[in-house]
Image (cartoon, one colour):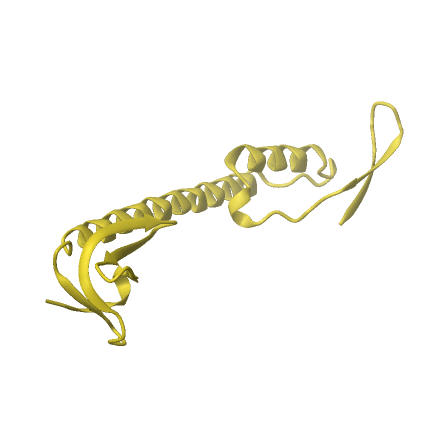
Length: 133
């Protein structure tokens, strides 16, 4: 999206290309900058109600806290899956489709996915294990 504007100090016009950010890329500082810009550019004869600004700030804070909580929960789930995999070392496992079987010799975690490495040289995601012997 192209945005054309006029510099109030010099009177010159400028052109910028703005990209639409995804909701997770806007941090608290960027939100505050947007809020201040909105306040500066409001119609002086019909200003925005201060309660509306507070509502926007509270909403953003709530969303930011929820995102942080989700990240912490993801980390906790990843740690729990790793602990489950560690408990399988030395045990026989089979995949849910029954095509992959073997004894767990080690575990690994890549990009939040915990896999067990079998004595046959194959790997199996912890969530795909249906039988433990």
